[in-house]
Length: 290
View 1 (cartoon, helix red, strand yellow):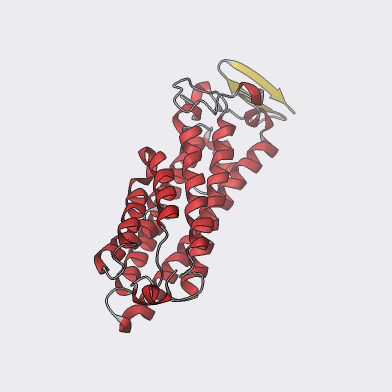
View 2: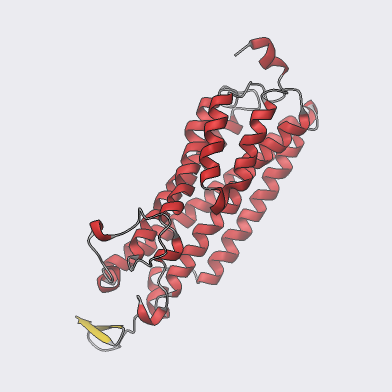
């Protein structure tokens, strides 16, 4: 990278065309699901590399790449709510501390707040030298709140699966199939798969990718506008773009609609007796356990 050219760049570095093109292709692959805005951001990144003093290109590029993941987080919220909705309310209350409706309200509300903070902070960094420091701090607050919020959601998701498996093994094992017969690799298949746990574990993997990205962004903004991490884009691709792409591309393979139970009565619904044992009802069958 030419030091003189980099010193004149608004972003403090010269983006590499090859990495931007690879990222553009990767996110475009999963754009039909979530990442049209992210793909646009990498497309503008290629244009910005040829016009390093363009404030407009830098602002749009930065906004698209930094803010677009906020929309993806709601996908995991809704999927957990859909899984919880298939359970009897007594079981749901045991495995999920929050009511499903509150999950959406709390975490989507948090995402909206962090979106506004990050957008405001990002805008202030482009106004002028006097507001760069303030903008970075506001963005850092937004990113920190986003990380804390999603970490709490991840704990809820893990608790949901752990308690369901520990306390209601009949539900956990319901519709269990041999891994070799699960058609998760059939990207374009319309066939429904009666193995909801595949979707659950996929959700857990997406959470890991999002958490890695969130931690990286906090480290990046903590170092400042001209910090080492912010001006060396290899860290961005390894700890931001790649984890996010893997998280979204997983849903291109494990398409949620194929793994979500169709109806509560036909999937993992339960009725619990008040006697000595517990009775699990499914499709007219009764499985008793003490």
